[in-house]
Structures are given as C-alpha cells and as structure tokens.
Length: 506
Image (cartoon, rainbow, N blue to C red):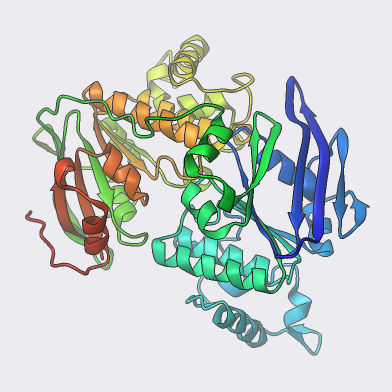
C-alpha cells in the first residue's frame, strides 16, 4: 500500500430539513488501499458517498482527488473521472442479459463497423468474467439470476471501467462463503493493481480480513481512523456504537407450545423436493444452508409467492390451501423478504403507507374499501412507538430511512396482520451491529409472546444465537436437523456443503 493520498474529503457538512446528516466529516484514501467505512445505519456513510459522487451538494467542505479540488455534478461525472460504485441495492436492468448490463451506456466499446455487435459484446464479457474467475453466462437474463449472482454482475461492471477508486457498499451481504472468497480474491487483485477501494460493511470479521484501515462514523460525525492491525473487534464495536454491546443475540427463553404450522412432502420440480418440517408456538426455527440451496424458494412457495407442484400445508392441524400471499396472510402466515428494495418496500411510498398496506382490510371503515385515516394513523403511531422506528414524520419516504429502520417498518407491517407464523428471510442483512441487536431482540420478544418464527439466515452466528431448532437445506432438501443445544458451526457447514451424510429424519 502506497502512502500517496488519492482522495481526501475534509470538513464535509450536509444539512437536510431538520437534520444535520454530516457535521464536518473527513475521509482520507490512499493509493492501493482497501479502506473500510463503518458505522451504524444513520451514521452518515451513505450520505458521505452521495456527496462524493455528486448526488448531494455539501454545504461545507472540500473534496481533493489526485491532488486537485473537485466537485462532481453526478455519479456519471465521477465515473468519468475514475470513481465507480457498487451499490448494496441492485441497480441492474432485469429485462437485459448480463453482458448488456455490464456494457450499458458504453455500447460503442462493443461495436463493429459502427453497429452493435452482440457476438463481440459476449466475447468481451466472457474475457472479463474469465479474468475475474467468475462463473456466469453473459447471455443469462438478469431477472433469472439469484441476488448473489446479481451482486457479482455489479462487481464485474464496476471493475470493467478500470476505475482508480471503487466504492463497495455491503458487497458481501448477499454472497455465500464461496462467493465471498471470490470477492476477496478480486479485491486483493485490484489492490495489487494500485486500485483504491472504499469498503462499506457491517461485517466486522471481513473488515479485519480484507481491509488496511478503517474509518468510523457515528450520528453524522467522524470518530477516528485506525490501522486494522492496531485494534480489536470489541474496540471497534465501542467506537461504532459509543457503548459496549454485550448481548448481540438477546434470545429470551420462550415457552414452546403445540405445532402451529406443518409442511408435508413439499415439492417444486427442479427447485425443492419432499420437504417436511413443522414449527411450534414460541419457537424460532432457523433455516441454514448456502445461498441458492433452496431455503428462500421453499418459504416463498409456502407464502404463496411462488407455485408448488405438490405438498400439504397444515395450520393448527387443519389443511389449508395457499396459492397467493393474500391467502397466506388470511391463514396467519406473513413473510419478511430478503430484499428490502426489490420485493419488500414500496420505495415511492411513505413510511406510514409501507407500515399499514398489508393490514388494509382491517383499517377500512366500510365494505367498499375506504380506509379509515384515523385508524391507519393510530396503527402506524403504535407500531412506530413499539418498534422505535426513527423517522421525521409519517410522510417521510421509506427510501430515506436507514436500513435498520426500514427493516423495523417491514416487521411492523406484518405484525399489524396478527400472524401466527412469521417468516423472516435474512432479517439483519445490510444493517449495522446496533440495529442487528434490536432486530434480534424484537424477534425473540415475538417468540416470547407465542408467535412461531421461521428465520432464514446466511450468518451462522445468527442461526446459532437465535434458533431453538435448526434445519440445514442443501440442493432443495432438508439434510440435517438439530436442537439448539446440539448445534455448532462446524456441523452446520459440513452438512451445508454436503461433506456429511444427511441425518434428517422426516
């Protein structure tokens, strides 16, 4: 790593109505450095990046890039100067293929004789994928990719610009262990080429694994910058939250009652086969396994979001038919999806609207479907208070909230439907360590009230810390089941990778 400074932000201040989002914030990036930017949701990380890229104009402060003071007018302007960003929320075009998305806006680079040449575009894409050792078909439509595969396409697109600075916002949040190792290798290769990387992450272990230095932000203020080799994880946590978090997985003891939900012989051709499981009142059932193993697909079919070919669903011992999310909700099943932006939030709608939309029928004042504004506001305010959602008003757009607060709104949405079973898919993906603890506490409290919770997670500490019972899914099948007391990380990984004989008894 060079000592040469390629990018420097000094005294950056950004004001929004009633909020000082950034207060004289600094950031220094060296050439060939992997520099972590960390802080709780709402700390100002995203706002700082938006100021750098020209999305927001700062009230105060300077940006120096390659020795010259700059002020970019847009992300395209920044990209032209050599600064690319990989966003946490996928920004690909679903109806285009992988190659089209990578070269979008740069079609001239794949032209021949002044015309777009698809064969040349696929060839150039294959070359980049091969160089980065990423196994993807450039002809695949993006809408048919998994979230993890989409994230890899975002990475390839950013790297294809040959940028001097790449900003990575939660790049591993949707990746499996194998894909994370691929990303780490790519980051190290880029570093060898003297590319500078701003690495925004909430995963402390990967900061110590891949980053050289780390800058901490809290409540819109710059806290400190340290060499990763000079600090410990507990010290970093104290810097992030300004306090010690001694109970990251605040699992409360809950009385586990009778079976609420039972699934028998659940199958969908080519996706999952003969899945059998049950979940009881007050129980948190953890669903582990690699990304792409079929965990989410099983739960989406249970929720009626995707079709199934065969199988039975029983609620309180009675068979029910679920062919749509509406029927799932009517039968007492709610689902918090893994992707807040694409399938969870309605980003153009207010915080209140996002909170109350699933309970629309309960909040209507007549059979015609006219909503009772007073009842809706009361429901929202009650949810907002109980879950401690931080927002400026009920009219604030959900897209303007931090990730942790967005997640609380979505949990609150489903609580208003009074579910018997709550499915949460990657409930703490992309949120900070403090908000994670709050979400964990909330899930535990819901189980304590007698709700049955099914929790899908790629983070083994979360699975081990929160679950009463754990299922491991591999290739669309449940291959292992154990109680909390018998669970350990090595065993779960072994079964997820298929290195052990399945021990699940249906």
